[in-house]
Amino acid sequence: MLQTIVITRMGFEVIEADNGASAINQALEAHPDLILMDLGMPIMNGEDAIVQLKIHPSTRDIPVIICTAFGRGPRVDRARDGGAVEILHKPFDFSELQKLLQKHLSSELKAGAGRAVNVGVEQQ
Image (cartoon, one colour):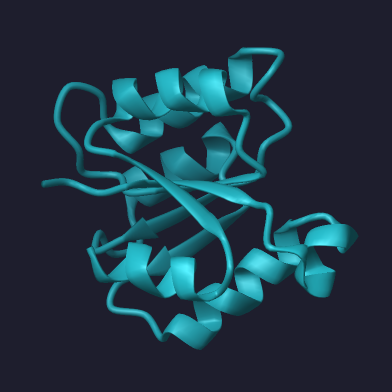
């Protein structure tokens, strides 16, 4: 996935998941600093995964950025209402993604420490 390559080159560690349920399990295990989530996924969609992440005490404060090809509408609205901090519509410019990562990560990570773990979730 191109997104993973670009984020890795930005200096971040990336953990990938291919569905919402897997993303939740990985987030509970790895406690990432930020989660990138697609909406259209098998097993559990992104909207439901966000709700579950925000319910769990150990993941509720992790910022979730939605990366989606879905246009504005009910699915995107549900994701934002469920707790997504940003919606990034595909196709997007990777400089825009970099700005969002820097905006939502701690000041230590913004300074270039590169220790963020991003759970990239995209429909396969």
